Length: 326
Image 1: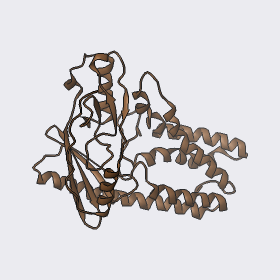
Image 2: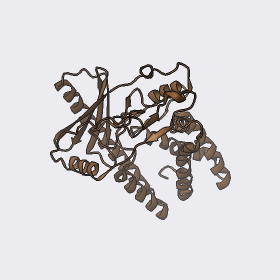
Image 3: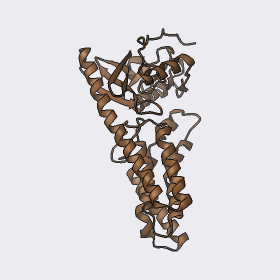
Image 4: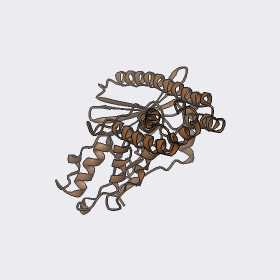
């Protein structure tokens, strides 16, 4: 809307919003016989620079035809709108295939949570005011707020990254890989994971006026070859896919002996239990592994989360006992 052609602010706002939402239709790509397909395709080809340019080009032609204007006047605004989906998602920790097909690497800057109402609500409200009053100033305000919030997230990320490296050094660990990501709905409490000596260490760091560390738990990293599966089997292939999707942060779930998941995502910032993964049954190596979600967040977990947000002292989180497969 900020750069929409004069006299077409509302049309530009609506068209831009639609174009920005189209890439997220990738959630509809699924296969009942292959549960990991949806996970692989989410934020894949639809969230690339190439897709954004092509989508913006097509949208510009359609809007120009409907409004009897020159398509070149819409090209820049709608390409930017189409790219906004990928550029905002790359700011989260999930990662997008921004440079596909030139590289298959997922890119994630981890400066904002996947769900953050403190970011979304003000931007949405200013956007609605802009459409209602046909005001470029309100739309510009939404854009300015977004940039400022993301800049704060970047600054917080740098502080937390330094704290995590200092913590690892205190433990005598040589970091091989490090991830720092904000927890849901805020830029104050962060989850960090680093790999050292074949293990991944999860900690929570509160980046307030003073940095405060909540030491967490650890788990051994898992590679597909560790599971003793039949080489070339469907199940072995799924484990390799899960390792790739987790960016090699694959761990065995501490309370589900049959589940292997992505250690980067957990319900508690200082815990190692992955929120999702696959169930591995070597007796069914010819079948795709079931996809498992573990999003239970009980009262105790909520109490700990609130206490860490407030900067309260807490006892160190103990690793749960392993529960064998049922």
